[in-house]
Amino acid sequence: MNTLTTGINLPNGAAATPAIGGTRYKEVKNAMLAALAAHEWKGGETIPSEKRLAERFGVSIGTLRKAIDELVADNILVRHQGLGTFVAQHQRDRHFFRFFRIVRQDGDKTYPSVTLVQFRKAKATRDIATLLKVETGARVFTFINRLALHGETVMIDNITVPEARFPGLTEAALRSRPSTLYNFYQDAFNINVLGTEERVRVAVANELESKLLEVPHGTPLLEVRRVAYSYHQAPVEVRISHANTARYEYVGASASHEEPL
Amino acid sequence: MNTLTTGINLPNGAAATPAIGGTRYKEVKNAMLAALAAHEWKGGETIPSEKRLAERFGVSIGTLRKAIDELVADNILVRHQGLGTFVAQHQRDRHFFRFFRIVRQDGDKTYPSVTLVQFRKAKATRDIATLLKVETGARVFTFINRLALHGETVMIDNITVPEARFPGLTEAALRSRPSTLYNFYQDAFNINVLGTEERVRVAVANELESKLLEVPHGTPLLEVRRVAYSYHQAPVEVRISHANTARYEYVGASASHEEPL
DNA sequence: AAGTGGTCTAGACCACTAC
DNA sequence: TAGTGGTCTAGACCACTTA
Image 1 (cartoon, rainbow over the protein chains, first blue to last red):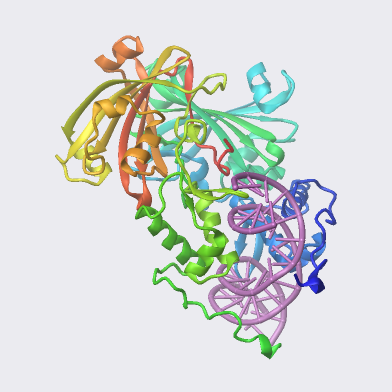
Image 2 (cartoon, chains in turn yellow, red, blue, orange):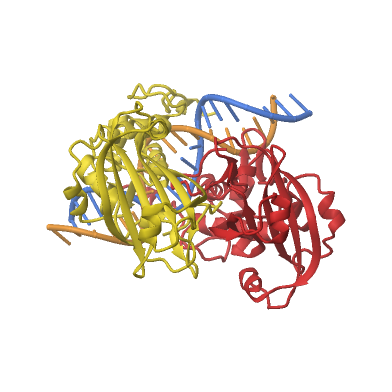
Protein backbone atom coordinates (compact mmCIF):
# COMPACT_ATOMS: atom_id res chain seq x y z
CA MET A 1 0.00 0.00 0.00
CA ASN A 2 2.75 2.44 -0.76
CA THR A 3 0.76 5.41 -2.01
CA LEU A 4 3.93 7.19 -3.02
CA THR A 5 4.53 4.76 -5.85
CA THR A 6 1.01 5.00 -7.22
CA GLY A 7 1.03 6.13 -10.80
CA ILE A 8 4.66 5.41 -11.49
CA ASN A 9 3.72 2.97 -14.24
CA LEU A 10 2.10 4.59 -17.21
CA PRO A 11 -1.47 3.48 -17.75
CA ASN A 12 -1.68 0.99 -20.59
CA GLY A 13 -2.67 2.39 -23.94
CA ALA A 14 -0.47 5.47 -23.69
CA ALA A 15 1.92 3.98 -26.24
CA ALA A 16 3.64 6.16 -28.79
CA THR A 17 2.48 3.97 -31.68
CA PRO A 18 -1.16 3.84 -32.63
CA ALA A 19 -0.85 0.17 -33.66
CA ILE A 20 -3.28 -2.14 -31.89
CA GLY A 21 -2.10 -5.35 -30.32
CA GLY A 22 -3.61 -5.76 -26.87
CA THR A 23 -0.39 -5.23 -24.94
CA ARG A 24 2.49 -2.80 -25.15
CA TYR A 25 5.07 -5.30 -26.25
CA LYS A 26 2.71 -6.62 -28.96
CA GLU A 27 2.27 -3.07 -30.19
CA VAL A 28 6.02 -2.65 -30.25
CA LYS A 29 6.40 -5.96 -32.07
CA ASN A 30 3.85 -4.93 -34.68
CA ALA A 31 5.51 -1.56 -35.12
CA MET A 32 8.84 -3.27 -35.68
CA LEU A 33 7.27 -5.73 -38.12
CA ALA A 34 5.85 -2.78 -40.03
CA ALA A 35 9.27 -1.13 -40.14
CA LEU A 36 10.78 -4.38 -41.39
CA ALA A 37 8.09 -4.87 -44.03
CA ALA A 38 8.67 -1.27 -45.16
CA HIS A 39 12.38 -2.09 -45.52
CA GLU A 40 13.44 0.48 -42.96
CA TRP A 41 15.97 -2.16 -41.89
CA LYS A 42 17.12 -4.57 -44.57
CA GLY A 43 18.38 -8.14 -44.52
CA GLY A 44 21.70 -8.49 -42.74
CA GLU A 45 21.66 -4.94 -41.38
CA THR A 46 21.82 -4.11 -37.72
CA ILE A 47 18.83 -2.43 -36.13
CA PRO A 48 19.14 0.32 -33.48
CA SER A 49 20.22 -0.66 -29.97
CA GLU A 50 17.68 -1.77 -27.41
CA LYS A 51 18.13 1.45 -25.49
CA ARG A 52 17.40 3.60 -28.55
CA LEU A 53 14.41 1.49 -29.59
CA ALA A 54 13.00 1.61 -26.08
CA GLU A 55 13.14 5.40 -26.21
CA ARG A 56 11.66 5.49 -29.71
CA PHE A 57 8.65 3.40 -28.72
CA GLY A 58 8.31 4.93 -25.27
CA VAL A 59 8.64 1.68 -23.33
CA SER A 60 11.16 0.28 -20.90
CA ILE A 61 14.04 -1.91 -22.02
CA GLY A 62 12.34 -4.98 -20.54
CA THR A 63 9.23 -4.46 -22.61
CA LEU A 64 11.23 -3.73 -25.73
CA ARG A 65 13.20 -6.90 -25.15
CA LYS A 66 10.04 -8.96 -24.92
CA ALA A 67 9.02 -7.73 -28.37
CA ILE A 68 12.43 -8.57 -29.78
CA ASP A 69 12.32 -11.95 -28.02
CA GLU A 70 9.33 -12.91 -30.14
CA LEU A 71 10.84 -11.62 -33.36
CA VAL A 72 13.93 -13.69 -32.60
CA ALA A 73 11.77 -16.74 -31.88
CA ASP A 74 10.15 -16.18 -35.29
CA ASN A 75 13.60 -16.19 -36.92
CA ILE A 76 13.07 -12.63 -38.12
CA LEU A 77 15.81 -11.07 -36.01
CA VAL A 78 19.11 -12.40 -34.72
CA ARG A 79 20.91 -11.16 -31.61
CA HIS A 80 24.66 -11.08 -31.20
CA GLN A 81 25.89 -10.17 -27.75
CA GLY A 82 28.31 -7.30 -27.97
CA LEU A 83 27.45 -6.60 -31.59
CA GLY A 84 23.79 -5.77 -31.84
CA THR A 85 20.55 -7.13 -33.28
CA PHE A 86 20.32 -7.96 -36.98
CA VAL A 87 17.67 -8.66 -39.56
CA ALA A 88 18.03 -12.40 -40.18
CA GLN A 89 19.44 -13.30 -43.54
CA HIS A 90 19.10 -16.52 -45.48
CA GLN A 91 22.51 -18.12 -45.67
CA ARG A 92 23.80 -21.41 -46.93
CA ASP A 93 25.19 -22.40 -43.56
CA ARG A 94 22.45 -20.98 -41.36
CA HIS A 95 18.90 -22.30 -41.30
CA PHE A 96 19.29 -23.86 -44.73
CA PHE A 97 17.96 -27.20 -43.49
CA ARG A 98 14.96 -25.48 -42.00
CA PHE A 99 13.67 -25.23 -45.57
CA PHE A 100 15.51 -28.06 -47.31
CA ARG A 101 14.17 -31.20 -45.73
CA ILE A 102 15.52 -34.04 -47.85
CA VAL A 103 18.11 -36.21 -46.15
CA ARG A 104 19.71 -39.56 -46.87
CA GLN A 105 17.94 -42.47 -45.21
CA ASP A 106 20.80 -42.86 -42.73
CA GLY A 107 20.18 -39.25 -41.64
CA ASP A 108 23.12 -37.70 -43.48
CA LYS A 109 22.50 -34.05 -44.38
CA THR A 110 24.29 -32.48 -47.33
CA TYR A 111 23.75 -29.41 -49.44
CA PRO A 112 22.18 -30.14 -52.80
CA SER A 113 23.86 -29.10 -56.01
CA VAL A 114 21.20 -27.24 -57.95
CA THR A 115 20.91 -26.97 -61.73
CA LEU A 116 18.44 -24.72 -63.52
CA VAL A 117 16.73 -26.86 -66.13
CA GLN A 118 14.07 -24.54 -67.47
CA PHE A 119 13.01 -20.90 -67.10
CA ARG A 120 10.06 -19.16 -68.70
CA LYS A 121 7.44 -16.49 -68.32
CA ALA A 122 3.91 -17.79 -67.98
CA LYS A 123 0.43 -16.95 -66.77
CA ALA A 124 -0.82 -18.24 -63.42
CA THR A 125 -3.19 -21.17 -63.56
CA ARG A 126 -6.22 -21.02 -61.33
CA ASP A 127 -4.65 -23.24 -58.66
CA ILE A 128 -1.34 -21.39 -58.56
CA ALA A 129 -3.10 -18.03 -58.63
CA THR A 130 -5.19 -19.00 -55.62
CA LEU A 131 -2.12 -20.00 -53.65
CA LEU A 132 -0.21 -16.86 -54.65
CA LYS A 133 -3.25 -14.66 -54.05
CA VAL A 134 -3.04 -13.11 -57.52
CA GLU A 135 -5.54 -13.03 -60.39
CA THR A 136 -5.83 -16.11 -62.54
CA GLY A 137 -3.71 -15.43 -65.62
CA ALA A 138 -1.43 -12.96 -63.82
CA ARG A 139 2.12 -12.89 -65.11
CA VAL A 140 4.47 -15.22 -63.30
CA PHE A 141 7.92 -16.67 -63.70
CA THR A 142 8.18 -20.42 -63.53
CA PHE A 143 11.37 -22.43 -63.47
CA ILE A 144 12.55 -25.94 -62.85
CA ASN A 145 15.54 -26.92 -60.71
CA ARG A 146 17.24 -30.29 -60.57
CA LEU A 147 18.70 -31.14 -57.14
CA ALA A 148 21.46 -33.69 -56.71
CA LEU A 149 22.85 -35.17 -53.50
CA HIS A 150 26.11 -37.13 -53.48
CA GLY A 151 26.06 -36.89 -57.26
CA GLU A 152 22.64 -38.49 -57.60
CA THR A 153 19.63 -36.54 -58.87
CA VAL A 154 17.05 -36.84 -56.10
CA MET A 155 14.47 -34.13 -56.58
CA ILE A 156 12.91 -31.89 -59.23
CA ASP A 157 11.57 -28.51 -58.07
CA ASN A 158 8.92 -26.69 -60.08
CA ILE A 159 8.92 -23.11 -58.80
CA THR A 160 6.50 -20.27 -59.57
CA VAL A 161 6.82 -16.66 -58.42
CA PRO A 162 4.66 -13.65 -59.30
CA GLU A 163 6.23 -11.15 -61.70
CA ALA A 164 4.79 -8.27 -59.67
CA ARG A 165 7.06 -9.13 -56.75
CA PHE A 166 10.06 -10.15 -58.83
CA PRO A 167 10.28 -7.38 -61.46
CA GLY A 168 12.95 -8.04 -64.05
CA LEU A 169 13.87 -11.54 -62.92
CA THR A 170 15.96 -13.21 -65.62
CA GLU A 171 17.36 -16.64 -66.20
CA ALA A 172 20.88 -15.20 -66.15
CA ALA A 173 20.39 -13.59 -62.74
CA LEU A 174 18.98 -16.84 -61.38
CA ARG A 175 21.92 -18.82 -62.71
CA SER A 176 24.57 -16.47 -61.41
CA ARG A 177 23.15 -16.07 -57.90
CA PRO A 178 25.99 -16.52 -55.44
CA SER A 179 24.07 -18.18 -52.60
CA THR A 180 20.75 -19.87 -51.86
CA LEU A 181 17.56 -19.06 -53.70
CA TYR A 182 15.94 -17.44 -50.68
CA ASN A 183 19.07 -15.38 -50.08
CA PHE A 184 18.76 -14.25 -53.69
CA TYR A 185 15.12 -13.28 -53.19
CA GLN A 186 16.19 -11.21 -50.19
CA ASP A 187 19.17 -9.47 -51.79
CA ALA A 188 17.78 -8.85 -55.26
CA PHE A 189 14.08 -8.26 -54.57
CA ASN A 190 13.90 -7.42 -50.86
CA ILE A 191 11.66 -10.42 -50.32
CA ASN A 192 12.18 -12.15 -47.00
CA VAL A 193 10.85 -15.71 -46.83
CA LEU A 194 9.80 -16.13 -43.21
CA GLY A 195 7.94 -19.40 -43.30
CA THR A 196 6.48 -22.11 -45.47
CA GLU A 197 3.57 -24.51 -45.50
CA GLU A 198 4.03 -27.92 -47.00
CA ARG A 199 1.72 -30.78 -47.95
CA VAL A 200 3.03 -34.18 -48.93
CA ARG A 201 1.51 -36.97 -51.00
CA VAL A 202 2.42 -39.66 -53.49
CA ALA A 203 2.58 -38.68 -57.16
CA VAL A 204 3.86 -40.20 -60.34
CA ALA A 205 6.85 -39.21 -62.45
CA ASN A 206 6.08 -37.33 -65.64
CA GLU A 207 8.24 -37.49 -68.73
CA LEU A 208 10.75 -34.80 -67.77
CA GLU A 209 11.05 -36.05 -64.20
CA SER A 210 11.56 -39.67 -65.13
CA LYS A 211 14.29 -38.59 -67.53
CA LEU A 212 16.08 -36.34 -65.03
CA LEU A 213 15.66 -38.71 -62.09
CA GLU A 214 16.55 -41.70 -64.25
CA VAL A 215 13.54 -43.72 -63.19
CA PRO A 216 10.91 -45.42 -65.37
CA HIS A 217 7.98 -43.31 -66.50
CA GLY A 218 5.20 -43.67 -63.93
CA THR A 219 7.47 -44.39 -60.96
CA PRO A 220 5.80 -43.25 -57.72
CA LEU A 221 7.51 -40.20 -56.21
CA LEU A 222 7.09 -38.10 -53.11
CA GLU A 223 5.29 -34.87 -53.97
CA VAL A 224 5.83 -31.83 -51.74
CA ARG A 225 3.69 -28.75 -52.37
CA ARG A 226 5.09 -25.67 -50.70
CA VAL A 227 3.87 -22.12 -50.35
CA ALA A 228 6.46 -19.66 -49.02
CA TYR A 229 5.33 -16.60 -47.05
CA SER A 230 6.83 -13.22 -46.27
CA TYR A 231 5.65 -10.47 -43.90
CA HIS A 232 1.91 -10.37 -43.17
CA GLN A 233 1.62 -13.96 -44.43
CA ALA A 234 1.94 -12.73 -47.99
CA PRO A 235 2.60 -15.69 -50.32
CA VAL A 236 5.66 -15.14 -52.51
CA GLU A 237 6.45 -18.51 -54.03
CA VAL A 238 4.74 -21.79 -54.91
CA ARG A 239 6.94 -24.84 -55.27
CA ILE A 240 5.99 -28.34 -56.28
CA SER A 241 8.76 -30.84 -55.69
CA HIS A 242 8.97 -34.46 -56.77
CA ALA A 243 11.51 -36.63 -54.97
CA ASN A 244 12.82 -40.12 -55.46
CA THR A 245 12.79 -41.64 -51.98
CA ALA A 246 14.60 -44.86 -52.81
CA ARG A 247 17.65 -43.67 -50.87
CA TYR A 248 16.53 -40.30 -49.47
CA GLU A 249 13.56 -39.18 -47.43
CA TYR A 250 11.63 -36.16 -46.23
CA VAL A 251 12.10 -34.84 -42.70
CA GLY A 252 8.57 -34.30 -41.51
CA ALA A 253 6.99 -32.56 -38.55
CA SER A 254 8.91 -32.59 -35.30
CA ALA A 255 6.15 -31.66 -32.85
CA SER A 256 8.44 -30.07 -30.32
CA HIS A 257 10.21 -26.74 -30.13
CA GLU A 258 12.00 -26.16 -33.41
CA GLU A 259 15.08 -28.33 -33.70
CA PRO A 260 18.38 -26.47 -33.22
CA LEU A 261 20.31 -26.24 -36.46
CA MET B 1 28.03 4.63 -9.39
CA ASN B 2 25.60 4.17 -6.55
CA THR B 3 27.76 2.26 -4.12
CA LEU B 4 24.81 1.67 -1.84
CA THR B 5 23.23 -0.71 -4.29
CA THR B 6 26.38 -2.71 -4.84
CA GLY B 7 25.85 -6.29 -3.85
CA ILE B 8 22.08 -6.24 -3.95
CA ASN B 9 22.04 -8.87 -6.66
CA LEU B 10 23.30 -12.24 -5.52
CA PRO B 11 26.43 -13.32 -7.32
CA ASN B 12 25.59 -15.91 -9.94
CA GLY B 13 26.13 -19.51 -8.96
CA ALA B 14 24.60 -19.16 -5.52
CA ALA B 15 21.55 -21.10 -6.67
CA ALA B 16 19.75 -23.44 -4.34
CA THR B 17 19.85 -26.30 -6.84
CA PRO B 18 23.12 -27.95 -7.75
CA ALA B 19 21.90 -28.58 -11.32
CA ILE B 20 24.16 -27.10 -13.97
CA GLY B 21 22.75 -25.06 -16.81
CA GLY B 22 24.82 -21.93 -17.35
CA THR B 23 22.23 -19.48 -16.07
CA ARG B 24 19.90 -19.37 -13.13
CA TYR B 25 16.71 -19.73 -15.10
CA LYS B 26 18.16 -22.70 -17.01
CA GLU B 27 19.01 -24.29 -13.69
CA VAL B 28 15.48 -23.68 -12.51
CA LYS B 29 14.10 -25.10 -15.76
CA ASN B 30 16.22 -28.23 -15.40
CA ALA B 31 15.19 -28.64 -11.79
CA MET B 32 11.54 -28.39 -12.82
CA LEU B 33 12.07 -30.86 -15.66
CA ALA B 34 13.63 -33.25 -13.16
CA ALA B 35 10.63 -32.86 -10.85
CA LEU B 36 8.30 -33.50 -13.78
CA ALA B 37 10.25 -36.56 -14.94
CA ALA B 38 10.15 -37.86 -11.36
CA HIS B 39 6.36 -37.44 -11.40
CA GLU B 40 6.36 -34.96 -8.55
CA TRP B 41 3.67 -33.20 -10.56
CA LYS B 42 1.53 -35.38 -12.83
CA GLY B 43 -0.36 -34.78 -16.05
CA GLY B 44 -3.26 -32.37 -15.62
CA GLU B 45 -2.25 -31.38 -12.09
CA THR B 46 -1.50 -27.84 -11.05
CA ILE B 47 2.03 -27.00 -9.95
CA PRO B 48 2.80 -24.60 -7.06
CA SER B 49 2.31 -20.88 -7.62
CA GLU B 50 5.05 -18.77 -9.12
CA LYS B 51 5.64 -17.10 -5.76
CA ARG B 52 6.11 -20.41 -3.98
CA LEU B 53 8.35 -21.81 -6.71
CA ALA B 54 10.46 -18.66 -6.70
CA GLU B 55 11.01 -19.12 -2.96
CA ARG B 56 11.75 -22.82 -3.37
CA PHE B 57 14.43 -22.23 -5.99
CA GLY B 58 15.76 -19.08 -4.39
CA VAL B 59 15.21 -16.81 -7.39
CA SER B 60 13.04 -13.82 -8.11
CA ILE B 61 9.62 -14.18 -9.72
CA GLY B 62 10.95 -12.79 -12.99
CA THR B 63 13.63 -15.45 -13.24
CA LEU B 64 11.21 -18.19 -12.26
CA ARG B 65 8.81 -16.94 -14.92
CA LYS B 66 11.50 -17.13 -17.58
CA ALA B 67 12.03 -20.81 -16.76
CA ILE B 68 8.29 -21.47 -16.94
CA ASP B 69 8.11 -19.46 -20.20
CA GLU B 70 10.36 -22.00 -21.85
CA LEU B 71 8.50 -24.99 -20.44
CA VAL B 72 5.28 -23.48 -21.79
CA ALA B 73 6.92 -22.91 -25.19
CA ASP B 74 7.89 -26.59 -25.14
CA ASN B 75 4.25 -27.54 -24.52
CA ILE B 76 5.19 -29.13 -21.22
CA LEU B 77 3.29 -26.69 -19.00
CA VAL B 78 0.12 -24.68 -19.57
CA ARG B 79 -0.71 -21.42 -17.82
CA HIS B 80 -4.22 -20.31 -16.95
CA GLN B 81 -4.55 -16.80 -15.64
CA GLY B 82 -6.37 -16.81 -12.33
CA LEU B 83 -6.14 -20.59 -12.03
CA GLY B 84 -2.52 -21.60 -11.98
CA THR B 85 0.04 -23.48 -14.05
CA PHE B 86 -0.64 -27.06 -15.09
CA VAL B 87 1.24 -30.02 -16.47
CA ALA B 88 0.04 -30.20 -20.07
CA GLN B 89 -2.18 -33.16 -20.83
CA HIS B 90 -2.86 -34.81 -24.15
CA GLN B 91 -6.47 -34.21 -25.04
CA ARG B 92 -8.58 -34.90 -28.05
CA ASP B 93 -9.43 -31.24 -28.57
CA ARG B 94 -6.09 -29.76 -27.63
CA HIS B 95 -2.90 -30.26 -29.65
CA PHE B 96 -4.27 -33.40 -31.27
CA PHE B 97 -3.38 -32.13 -34.73
CA ARG B 98 0.15 -31.40 -33.59
CA PHE B 99 0.68 -35.15 -33.79
CA PHE B 100 -1.97 -36.26 -36.26
CA ARG B 101 -0.96 -34.68 -39.53
CA ILE B 102 -3.23 -36.26 -42.13
CA VAL B 103 -5.78 -33.89 -43.66
CA ARG B 104 -8.12 -34.00 -46.63
CA GLN B 105 -6.62 -32.46 -49.75
CA ASP B 106 -8.92 -29.46 -49.42
CA GLY B 107 -7.44 -28.83 -45.99
CA ASP B 108 -10.33 -30.20 -43.95
CA LYS B 109 -9.23 -31.53 -40.54
CA THR B 110 -11.25 -34.22 -38.80
CA TYR B 111 -10.58 -36.65 -36.00
CA PRO B 112 -9.90 -40.18 -37.21
CA SER B 113 -11.96 -43.09 -36.01
CA VAL B 114 -9.45 -45.64 -34.82
CA THR B 115 -9.90 -49.42 -34.80
CA LEU B 116 -7.46 -51.83 -33.20
CA VAL B 117 -6.76 -54.51 -35.77
CA GLN B 118 -4.03 -56.54 -34.11
CA PHE B 119 -2.25 -56.72 -30.75
CA ARG B 120 0.58 -59.00 -29.73
CA LYS B 121 3.70 -59.34 -27.64
CA ALA B 122 6.90 -59.58 -29.62
CA LYS B 123 10.65 -59.13 -29.45
CA ALA B 124 12.29 -55.98 -30.80
CA THR B 125 13.95 -56.31 -34.17
CA ARG B 126 17.35 -54.71 -34.52
CA ASP B 127 15.97 -51.62 -36.25
CA ILE B 128 13.18 -51.06 -33.75
CA ALA B 129 15.49 -51.75 -30.83
CA THR B 130 17.93 -49.13 -32.06
CA LEU B 131 15.20 -46.52 -32.31
CA LEU B 132 13.75 -47.41 -28.90
CA LYS B 133 17.23 -47.61 -27.34
CA VAL B 134 16.61 -51.11 -25.96
CA GLU B 135 18.44 -54.39 -26.54
CA THR B 136 17.68 -56.28 -29.72
CA GLY B 137 15.17 -58.94 -28.76
CA ALA B 138 13.82 -56.97 -25.80
CA ARG B 139 10.15 -57.55 -25.07
CA VAL B 140 7.82 -55.14 -26.76
CA PHE B 141 4.14 -54.74 -27.49
CA THR B 142 3.20 -54.18 -31.09
CA PHE B 143 -0.23 -53.34 -32.40
CA ILE B 144 -1.91 -52.18 -35.56
CA ASN B 145 -4.52 -49.46 -35.81
CA ARG B 146 -6.77 -48.69 -38.74
CA LEU B 147 -7.64 -45.00 -39.10
CA ALA B 148 -10.67 -43.81 -41.01
CA LEU B 149 -11.64 -40.27 -42.01
CA HIS B 150 -15.12 -39.47 -43.26
CA GLY B 151 -15.82 -43.20 -43.23
CA GLU B 152 -12.91 -44.03 -45.50
CA THR B 153 -9.91 -46.01 -44.28
CA VAL B 154 -6.93 -43.78 -44.97
CA MET B 155 -4.03 -44.97 -42.85
CA ILE B 156 -2.65 -48.05 -41.11
CA ASP B 157 -0.48 -47.49 -38.03
CA ASN B 158 1.99 -50.10 -36.91
CA ILE B 159 2.95 -49.18 -33.34
CA THR B 160 5.65 -50.65 -31.11
CA VAL B 161 6.28 -49.79 -27.45
CA PRO B 162 8.74 -51.34 -24.99
CA GLU B 163 7.22 -53.59 -22.34
CA ALA B 164 9.56 -52.15 -19.73
CA ARG B 165 7.82 -48.79 -19.95
CA PHE B 166 4.32 -50.16 -20.44
CA PRO B 167 4.10 -52.93 -17.83
CA GLY B 168 0.88 -54.91 -18.06
CA LEU B 169 -0.44 -53.30 -21.23
CA THR B 170 -3.32 -55.38 -22.56
CA GLU B 171 -5.44 -55.39 -25.66
CA ALA B 172 -8.53 -54.80 -23.53
CA ALA B 173 -7.05 -51.70 -21.89
CA LEU B 174 -6.05 -50.35 -25.29
CA ARG B 175 -9.52 -50.92 -26.69
CA SER B 176 -11.35 -49.35 -23.78
CA ARG B 177 -9.20 -46.23 -23.50
CA PRO B 178 -11.51 -43.24 -23.23
CA SER B 179 -9.40 -40.69 -25.10
CA THR B 180 -6.40 -40.44 -27.40
CA LEU B 181 -3.54 -42.91 -27.37
CA TYR B 182 -1.05 -40.41 -25.94
CA ASN B 183 -3.54 -39.42 -23.27
CA PHE B 184 -3.78 -43.11 -22.41
CA TYR B 185 0.02 -43.40 -22.17
CA GLN B 186 -0.02 -40.46 -19.79
CA ASP B 187 -2.87 -41.60 -17.56
CA ALA B 188 -2.12 -45.31 -17.42
CA PHE B 189 1.68 -45.38 -17.56
CA ASN B 190 2.77 -41.87 -16.58
CA ILE B 191 4.46 -41.50 -19.95
CA ASN B 192 4.31 -38.00 -21.36
CA VAL B 193 4.95 -37.79 -25.10
CA LEU B 194 6.61 -34.41 -25.56
CA GLY B 195 7.77 -34.55 -29.14
CA THR B 196 8.20 -36.71 -32.19
CA GLU B 197 10.54 -37.07 -35.13
CA GLU B 198 9.14 -38.15 -38.47
CA ARG B 199 10.62 -39.27 -41.76
CA VAL B 200 8.51 -39.67 -44.87
CA ARG B 201 9.02 -41.74 -48.02
CA VAL B 202 7.11 -43.76 -50.58
CA ALA B 203 6.40 -47.40 -49.78
CA VAL B 204 4.22 -50.15 -51.14
CA ALA B 205 1.11 -51.72 -49.68
CA ASN B 206 1.56 -55.18 -48.15
CA GLU B 207 -1.20 -57.76 -48.02
CA LEU B 208 -2.89 -56.59 -44.82
CA GLU B 209 -2.68 -52.93 -45.81
CA SER B 210 -4.03 -53.42 -49.30
CA LYS B 211 -6.96 -55.33 -47.79
CA LEU B 212 -7.73 -52.74 -45.10
CA LEU B 213 -7.16 -49.74 -47.35
CA GLU B 214 -9.04 -51.42 -50.21
CA VAL B 215 -6.32 -50.78 -52.75
CA PRO B 216 -4.55 -53.26 -55.04
CA HIS B 217 -1.57 -55.10 -53.64
CA GLY B 218 1.54 -53.10 -54.45
CA THR B 219 -0.15 -49.69 -54.54
CA PRO B 220 2.33 -46.94 -53.61
CA LEU B 221 1.57 -45.41 -50.21
CA LEU B 222 3.01 -42.63 -48.08
CA GLU B 223 5.18 -44.11 -45.34
CA VAL B 224 5.71 -42.09 -42.15
CA ARG B 225 8.21 -43.40 -39.61
CA ARG B 226 7.81 -41.77 -36.23
CA VAL B 227 9.72 -41.97 -32.98
CA ALA B 228 7.98 -40.39 -29.99
CA TYR B 229 10.03 -38.96 -27.13
CA SER B 230 9.39 -38.23 -23.47
CA TYR B 231 11.54 -36.37 -20.91
CA HIS B 232 15.29 -36.40 -21.55
CA GLN B 233 14.65 -37.35 -25.18
CA ALA B 234 13.83 -40.87 -24.08
CA PRO B 235 12.15 -42.77 -26.96
CA VAL B 236 8.91 -44.38 -25.90
CA GLU B 237 7.18 -45.40 -29.11
CA VAL B 238 8.01 -46.29 -32.70
CA ARG B 239 5.25 -45.96 -35.25
CA ILE B 240 5.29 -46.80 -38.94
CA SER B 241 2.26 -45.47 -40.77
CA HIS B 242 1.14 -46.17 -44.31
CA ALA B 243 -1.34 -43.74 -45.83
CA ASN B 244 -3.35 -43.67 -49.01
CA THR B 245 -2.91 -40.14 -50.32
CA ALA B 246 -5.44 -40.31 -53.15
CA ARG B 247 -7.74 -37.93 -51.27
CA TYR B 248 -5.73 -37.08 -48.14
CA GLU B 249 -2.25 -35.75 -47.53
CA TYR B 250 0.41 -35.23 -44.92
CA VAL B 251 0.95 -31.79 -43.38
CA GLY B 252 4.69 -31.34 -43.49
CA ALA B 253 7.11 -28.91 -41.97
CA SER B 254 5.93 -25.36 -41.44
CA ALA B 255 9.29 -23.61 -40.99
CA SER B 256 7.92 -20.82 -38.80
CA HIS B 257 6.90 -20.65 -35.20
CA GLU B 258 4.60 -23.54 -34.43
CA GLU B 259 1.16 -22.98 -35.92
CA PRO B 260 -1.53 -22.03 -33.39
CA LEU B 261 -4.04 -24.81 -32.97
C1' DA C 1 37.12 1.81 -22.58
C1' DA C 2 32.75 2.15 -24.61
C1' DG C 3 28.83 -0.02 -26.38
C1' DT C 4 26.04 -3.99 -27.11
C1' DG C 5 22.98 -7.69 -25.72
C1' DG C 6 22.09 -11.30 -21.53
C1' DT C 7 20.62 -12.07 -16.88
C1' DC C 8 18.45 -10.96 -12.68
C1' DT C 9 16.04 -8.38 -9.30
C1' DA C 10 11.99 -6.28 -6.50
C1' DG C 11 7.97 -4.65 -6.89
C1' DA C 12 3.64 -2.22 -8.89
C1' DC C 13 -0.52 -2.80 -11.19
C1' DC C 14 -3.89 -5.34 -14.16
C1' DA C 15 -7.03 -9.28 -15.52
C1' DC C 16 -9.03 -13.35 -14.44
C1' DT C 17 -11.03 -17.13 -11.47
C1' DA C 18 -13.03 -18.98 -7.53
C1' DC C 19 -15.35 -18.64 -3.17
C1' DT D 1 -12.07 -10.69 -1.53
C1' DA D 2 -8.07 -13.45 -2.01
C1' DG D 3 -5.07 -15.78 -5.01
C1' DT D 4 -3.35 -16.68 -9.48
C1' DG D 5 -0.84 -15.57 -13.68
C1' DG D 6 0.18 -11.36 -17.20
C1' DT D 7 2.40 -7.03 -18.05
C1' DC D 8 5.57 -3.43 -17.23
C1' DT D 9 9.04 -0.84 -15.01
C1' DA D 10 13.90 0.96 -13.63
C1' DG D 11 18.00 -0.31 -12.88
C1' DA D 12 22.27 -3.29 -11.50
C1' DC D 13 25.64 -6.27 -13.06
C1' DC D 14 27.71 -9.64 -16.38
C1' DA D 15 29.71 -11.25 -20.88
C1' DC D 16 31.08 -10.19 -25.22
C1' DT D 17 32.91 -7.37 -29.24
C1' DT D 18 35.44 -3.73 -31.27
C1' DA D 19 38.68 -0.21 -31.23
